[in-house]
Image 1 (spheres, rainbow, N blue to C red):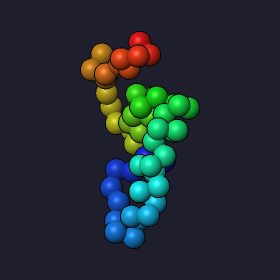
Image 2 (image 1 turned 90 degrees about the vertical axis):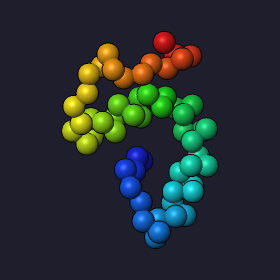
Image 3 (image 1 turned 180 degrees about the horizontal axis):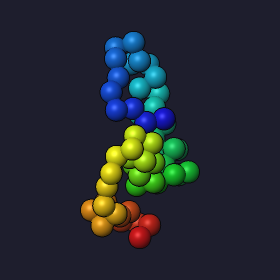
Image 4 (image 1 turned 45 degrees about the vertical axis):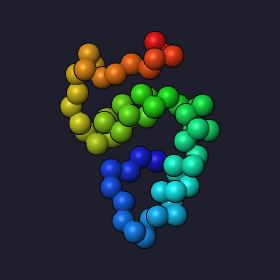
Length: 57
């Protein structure tokens, strides 16, 4: 789940999402999640301008 914006009614859901990030990123890297968000929202990007994971290459 990736949110670009949230309302007050979603506070509990957002807190749960934030607290779950450590476990979540054992399954998918932040970079992968970021690229998925760009693709899902039809955002054009240049691969050479996207950061690379420090530990993953």
